[in-house]
Amino acid sequence: LILPLGRHVLREACRQCRSWETDHGVRIGVSVNLSARQFQDGDLVETVRGALDDAGLPADRLCLEITETLAMGDIEWTIHTLHRLKEIGVRVAIEDFGTGHSSLNYLKRFPIDVVKIDGSFVRDIDTSVVDNAIVTAVVMLAQTLQITTVAECVESAGQLAKLRNLGCTLIQGYLFAKPMPAEEAAAWLASSEHGPLRLPIPRGADGESA
Image 1 (cartoon, helix red, strand yellow):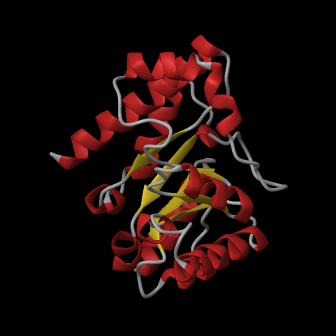
Image 2: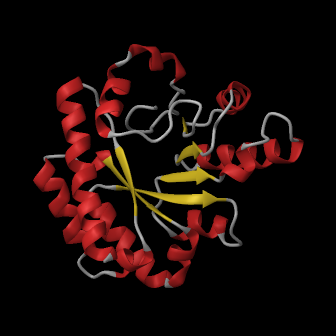
């Protein structure tokens, strides 16, 4: 069922994102995880294009997230598929960056827009010298390559402060909100209290931080 389920999730994500933009007058984006089976589907690019067209959502609002296991399964197919996705304008993110043996190879061979720093390096970033050094290195490398960084599993003000100082582009975690129904998310988006939590975006990056 992963293919029809994946198509449904993609369509609904694009539709909901467009609805929030229209209702609240804000420019936001949405990320959708792809399974290995979806990524191997020869119709993936057409499926993505169809979901964007049906929702009326600009392609640069959609970010597709893939894992190391998926990316390294068939290198040539991955490169071919990623380039086709980039041609239609969507963004691509690598999840759990830093946990695999080939992480740096992603940046060399794949057309990547976003690296998501794994939560195992973020949880103790305000107390661990080692974790701080790893995240610092990833952020600096990404900035040089004009790649957006997303820190996962941010749950404390201390982590947020450290990531701000390092120049991490975006953050993700329970510090801001836990998963919620679309109706509650709409109210959350409409609230101005979240504005000060935004992180700066490096020169050349697209979109707004959250």
